[in-house]
Length: 510
Ligand SMILES: Cc1cc2nc3c(=O)[nH]c(=O)nc-3n(C[C@H](O)[C@H](O)[C@H](O)COP(=O)(O)OP(=O)(O)OC[C@H]3O[C@@H](n4cnc5c(N)ncnc54)[C@H](O)[C@@H]3O)c2cc1C
Image 1 (cartoon, helix red, strand yellow):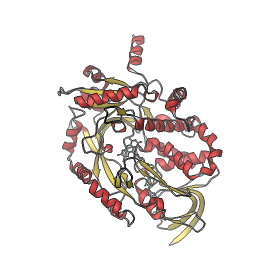
Image 2 (tube, rainbow, N blue to C red):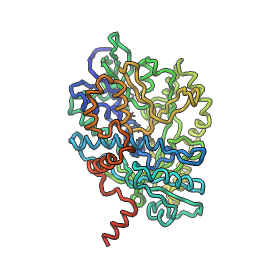
Image 3 (cartoon, rainbow, N blue to C red):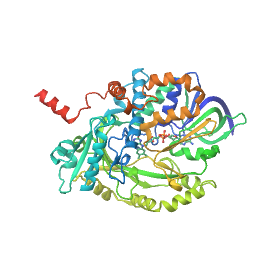
Image 4 (cartoon, rainbow, N blue to C red):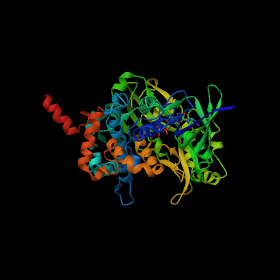
C-alpha cells in the first residue's frame, strides 16, 4: 500500500560516512535546503563505515606500499601517494572546522595520532623501500618520515614484531609519526547527531527500493518503511546514492546512461583481533606490509593499533575473501541480480580476466584460523592462537568497467563518482582510499552537480577548507600552517616527533 508522499530539496540514500559528509557540507553551504535521509538499518554507520568493518587508517599514503609503484627504470613513482595525501589534508581541514565551530566535539573520540609504518623483508624489497623513502622524505607532505634497516632500531620501533624473529633476511621499515587512526563509525554517528540538530529528517529502517525520474526532471524515490511495511514515495531535486555496496543496484534502477556498462565485484574481509591486553600494550603503530604476489591491493596485511570505544586494541588483516553479497547485511543474490543486459559482456570479460583473483579470494575464504595465525606470525613471530579471535569486516564492491587502457571488464580498485549529465543524481561506487577521502570526494560531487552555485559557495568552502583549489605540495607555508592548525584542533599535537626530536626530548628530560 502506497501512502506517504513528500517533496524535498535533497535525498541522501544511506547513513554512512559519505552521506554524513555530504549532508554536513550542504548544510553549511545552504542551511535552508531541506534534506531527507533514508537508511535501511536502525542506526547510522553500521555498514562499511562502522569501526569494526574497516581498518580505521587515515589514508594519507604514509605507509601503504600499493600507492607507490616502481617504474621500469627503477625509480619510484609517488604521484598517487601525493594525490591521496592532499585529499586527506582536505578531510583534516574540514574535521578541524567542525571541531573549531563546536559542530562536533571531543575529536579524540574519532581521531588519534598513531605512527604509520611500512615494513618489508628481503633484499629486493628493502632496496625498494629505501628508494621510496628517498623519493618521499624530501617532499613536504611526507616530512618527518624515517627509514631504518637496523634491527636494533626496529626493535625499539616495533618490539612485538621484532622479538623472536629468527630469519636473517634483510628487514627494513619506514616510520612517520604524523599518521592517524580514525574511528569512521564514531565520526559518522557524530555527524548524524549534528545533522539532527539542523532539521534534517533522518529515517532509519527505511529501505530505498526504486528510483525513477519524474516528468518535471526531479527524482521519485520509492521507499519501504521496514517497521510498518508501508511503501512511501518521496521526490527531490537532487539525490545522492550513498548506499556503499548497495549503491550499484540503485544506480542501475535510476536508468541514467552514465550508470550503464558498470558491474561490481564484491570482496569480503576478516580481521584477527587480539584479546590479550599484554600483547596489545606492546604495539603502538599501523604497520603495513606488502601484498603477496597475485593478491589484490586491499588484502595488504597490516598490524594496527586501534582505538575503538576509547579502548586500545590490536587488529591484523584484513584477509580478503569472496562473498556474493554487496553489503555485510546484503543478500547472497546481490551479485547475480547486478548482472543486466547492459553490463553482462563487461561482467563476463571481467570474469574471464579475473579468474586467478577469484580463485585466490575463494582460497582465502577457506583458510582455517590456524592458517591465518600462520600469516600473522610473519608479523608477530611469537603470536599465540588463543590470544586472537576472528571478526568479519565489511564488504567492498570494486567497480568493473570498460576502460581504454584495460579493455573490457577491467577491475578498478579506486573510488568512482557517477553523476547524471544534468547533475541531479550522483552515486559513489568503490571503496578505496575510502572514508579517509570522503570530504574531497563529496566536494567533487558538489562541484559536478551544482556548478551554478559554486561561485557563491566558494568563499564558504575556503573558510572550511583553506587549501581548497590549491596544491599543498606547491604551497609549503600553507601546508605548515594547516599541519599545525589541524593538529591543534584535532588534538594530534605533541605526538608528531621525528626520532631526532624524540632523542632531543629525552636528553632534555635527562
Ligand atoms: C575491510 C575494509 C577495510 C577498510 N579500511 C579502510 C581504511 O582503513 N580507511 C579508509 O579510509 N577506508 C577504509 N575502508 C573503506 C571505507 O570503509 C568505505 O569507503 C566507507 O565506509 C564507505 O562509506 P559509505 O557511506 O559509502 O558506505 P557505508 O558505510 O557502507 O554506508 C552505506 C549505507 O547505506 C545503506 N544502504 C544501502 N542500500 C540501501 C538502500 N537500498 N536503502 C537504504 N539504505 C541503504 C547501508 O545500510 C549503509 O548504512 C575499508 C572498507 C572495508 C570493507
